[in-house]
Amino acid sequence: MSQRMKESLIGGVLLGLVCVVGATIRSGFTASPVFVFSLWYNRVILGLAVGAPWKAASRSKALYRGAWLGLAISFAFYCSTNFQDPVSFIAGVVYGVVLEGWLSRSEKTG
Image (tube, rainbow, N blue to C red):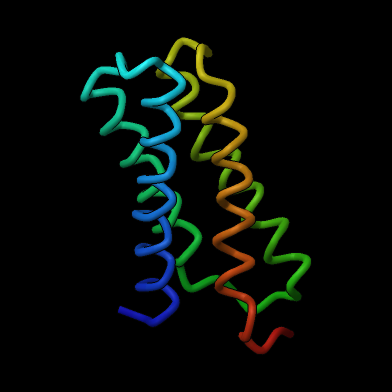
């Protein structure tokens, strides 16, 4: 497993925990365990997608790619909530950018 993939998966796990805490607080501590797990797992999948061995790109293109991946992957979760959790949907887009930003901080770009 590449260093990029390891860092991205760890980032997805950690951002997932941030999401879980936020969703739990937003729900008044009534969010179901299935909902919380699904949200966390969605962020792990986002980390997996962002960490894939993508073709080298400029930092701005990498950030754009992160936003698109965050949008596409978070939309699946958003649909499963019957479009009731827009905060988590938007957070997924932001997290895609954050992950790509973190991963591309020192990579050589082409």
